[in-house]
Image (cartoon, rainbow, N blue to C red; front, side):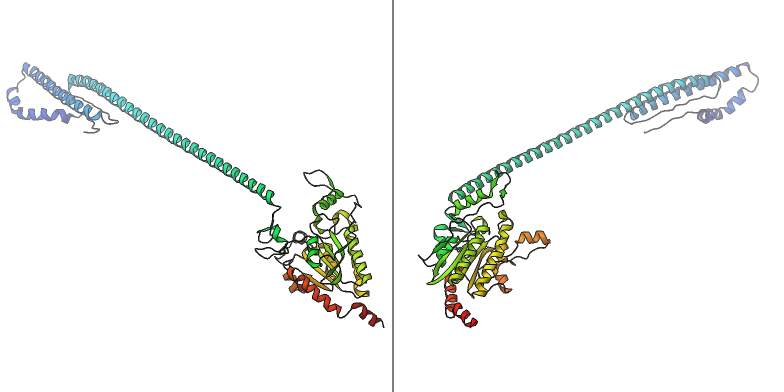
Length: 463
């Protein structure tokens, strides 16, 4: 029984229904007996009405009490229930008594309603408090889980960073150890520039400085080249005591190091290579044929051409011109030496002028051999003025380097465009000769020219 509201209004049907039935049953009796004006008639009617009203009020009381008890028990589990009880009796004094009783019933029911509402409010507050506690507990658990996850992630990151640092430190120690071992045994091995293989120096000289793994032609010192081309015991050096000065007082300032002068660098390379300058010149025999030969050394300041280099090569050409000797110049240079400024550039014109006298006026034979690398002012002068130009395999030959061209022109230089094979296809060289065949090729060329001596031919032309 939910949310039922019982209302007893001033409706006469509720009270008059039993009374009407009673009056119907006794109508004949009352009509017959009390027809005259009897003084007891009014008293009887008053007693009957009063007893009847009391009976009705008692029934109403018992009924309402039973309903209120039942509804109070039922409504105690519900949320919001209200009872509105109204009672009224239509006749006389009973109306006042019924109204007083109904007001007391209203007060009672209102108290029950207030009690029920208070209990429902308490239940609501308890349920809301429980929900708040549950939500707060859930939020605390979630926040604690998030904090745990964040702390675990931080610990993982820290551990990973520590592992990375440890691994990097181990790699650095290993690399440093490898570097130390490499420095310790670097005097025993030479690394190939092409395949990065190691070659044992003790056997490398006997193999003409050719890589055992890939056959790449490694750099050779000027002394090794002279030993390769000139017959033993026939070498006679020229101007070997000429040394460079510092004509323009050039100071070499390297980053993070103390200031080093050009003269100090010359002294350093003299101690390292055992040479006085970047070129060796002299007279010797190649398979019995007297020749004038000059060999440049890239290990001495990059084989750069300074005043002394230009002077020594010029004197060699003049000596070969006077003695009618074939001339060989082996080029390995980075170009003109910047520490001497325009004085090094003047050597290009001086050497070219001496070669003009040697080749055109005396009609003598000049062979230019280009090795890796040959660049700059050497390529632009006597390197490309030979009657026969021979180049070693895979040699790097250019006027300007790849990096300089790309930075100047903002264009990419194709790979291999400055190597011997590509330039040979363009007609820049006459022969590509491997190192172990070079001496025999030169000997054949000189024997061929010996059949037609150049000095006799020149005399015939004059006649």
